[in-house]
Amino acid sequence: MTAEQIIFLLTGALILVSALLVVTVRNLLHAALWLVVALFGVAVLYAILQASFLAVVQVVVYIGAIAILFIFAVMLTRREMRDTGPQTRPNWWIAALLGALVLTGLIVIMLAVPGADRTPAALPEGLDTVWALGNALVSPEAYVLPFEVASVLLLAALVGAVYVAGVGKKS
Amino acid sequence: MNFWNDPINFIANWLTGLLTGWGLAAGLATVLVYLVGITVLIVFAMLLDIGLVWVERKVVARFQDRLGPNRVGPFGLIQPFADIIKLVIKEDITPANADKVIYNIAPVLAATSVIALWAILPLSSRIFGVDLNVALLYLVATGALGTLAIIMGGWASNNKYALLGAFRMVANMVSYEIPMVVTLLIPTILADSMSVIGITEAQRGLWFAVLSPLGAVIFLISAIAELGRSPFDLTEAESELTAGFNVEYSGMKFGWFYASELLHAFTFGGFAAVLFFGGYGGFFGLEKALPWLTNPFIEAAVFIAKAMLGYWVIMWLKYSMPRVRIDHMLAFNWKFLVPLSLVLLAVTATLHKILIVLPGWQYALGMFFSNVVIVAATIEVLRDYGRKQRKAAEELAPQAQL
Image 1 (cartoon, one colour):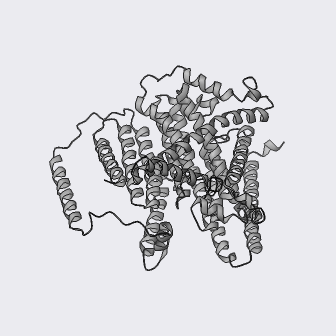
Image 2 (cartoon, each protein chain N blue to C red; image 1 turned 90 degrees about the horizontal axis):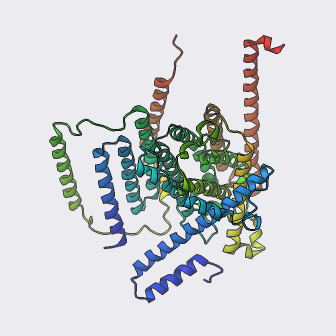
Image 3 (tube, each protein chain N blue to C red; image 1 turned 60 degrees about the vertical axis):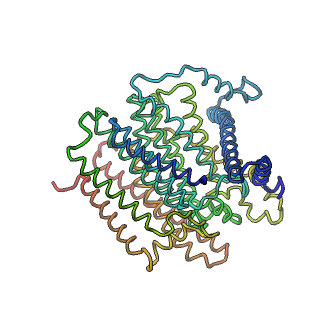
């Protein structure tokens, strides 16, 4: 077993355990912090895959923005941090069944992919992944259209947020 | 390769050779050497931190017309060690109903977020942790971890002042992150690279502070806000919040917050040097005549001197400015810094592409004057705004004139 595999297995176990704790822990703030651990684990996975840009953006966006907003919402909205109700709904077994089916499907698909059990080849020397990604985002042959559509969508969300939160001048 | 030209690789090769000579597998030996390297880097940063305690106290004393520590050792040099002994033997108090685990993790996370920055800090062209191609985003990411540490400490203390301090810190960090990210993009555009080594090498001939002085100033302001230092120290505001997010911490746990704040300030001084003041190099082409300037030890000394200078400016501002009120702080950011930095980014990106074909000195002059024009326009807009404000105030209360 190589060092990379050991790190992958440890990270995978960490993500699974913390993801489980997100939904089982009763203290809401602890749940939010376990979510941070799970998201950080995903960033580590990206780093193992040599996707440095994605790894760093994962931390900036998911931990730096989204998780902190979660924590804020939890801290500001609840006086009692403890959730006392039942933690499962009566039809939880449907979700469990669907989850198991998806997992089995994923495993079957992954096993069918040729070369899924090989270790990845090292990146060619001198390849700048950030440069390649940036070029792909603005190149007409690649992702310029989805990129622009996403930015229009975000702008619309921004305008909507300002409208909803704004005081407004309709007297 | 010898020790004086490439010390880190020399020692690493020697250690790897030694370990494999003892019969260790090559892969394991590499992992062990990396672990040793990480430990050495952290120990170096923490030792420097002890020195910074003394520097900070001495410099504050100078700014406030005092002597500072002067009893323990020559010039009070042993004072930080006395402080450490005091912090270690102090009673360690955990408040009642505190969230114990989070309360204890928070200071560790605060220190981690700062030490993680040292991984990308280039002391010299051959002494650095790692040359990431996304180093500047990494800088932002570790800032997010620092925010998280402060929220955890403030919330877990079970104290209203601590919680208020944490709230303010997040308002501060989330808003000042935007001008910071935008000004981080300016060296990226000028150097065509996001790696700190690439940015430093691009400044061999001319510092980016000359090409974009306004960018350097905005970076400094947002870095101070990110540090939570005065005039943006609303998280600690002694007169309102007793001590803010760390009010319940005592002993060495407080020490961790304090030490990480000092090291953070020094580290940001270092990043200001890397991004705008040439980092370890930037001798304006002088190194061609004097090749000994590219010796890694000389470069490291130059880097530390520049970082210290940045740190000194941060301290200078801290000890001569009053605290900004929170609404002023947010208004200053959203209504002034964010638009200004966005305009600067747009102008820099466009002009850089247009002027890059010109000879070096014309390019530099063009970039510099674009900054001058932006500053002049900003001052004009501000003056106009101030005039309108005064007029509105006069119309509201004409008798106040008498």
